[in-house]
Image 1 (cartoon, helix red, strand yellow):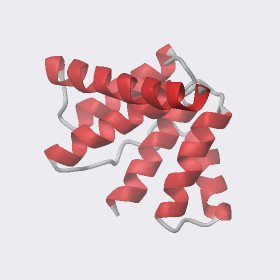
Image 2 (tube, rainbow, N blue to C red; image 1 turned 90 degrees about the vertical axis):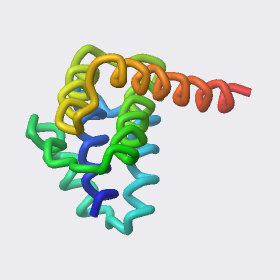
Image 3 (cartoon, rainbow, N blue to C red; image 1 turned 30 degrees about the vertical axis):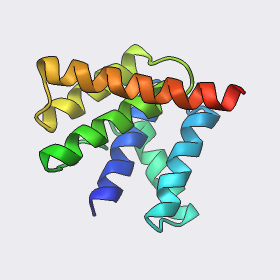
Length: 125
C-alpha cells in the first residue's frame, strides 16, 4: 500500500506546476508498473492529481522510508533539470506531513537533487 501512496505523492509533485514532462511521466509509469497499476487507473490518478491539491496528502511512512520517499519526490521533480516553485511547495508540504523538517529536510532535499542530476548526467553520455 505504501507504494501506491508514494506514487500518488509523486504524481502530486509532478503535476504541481501544471505540466507533466516526459521524464517525469517515465518515472511515474515505471513505479505504476512496479505496483501493478493498469493504464486506465494510472490515467485517472494523474487526472485527479492535476486538479486535486490534496491528492498526495495521505502518504504515511515510517521514518527510514519517509526519507527515501522524500528523496524520490525531489528527484522526480528535478529529473527535468529544475524544480518549480509549485513543485517545491508540494514537496515541503508532503515532507511536513512525513515529519521531515529543518536541516533534515534540506539534507534529504539536496540528496534528491544529487540523485536526479546523476541520472541525468548518465543519460547524457
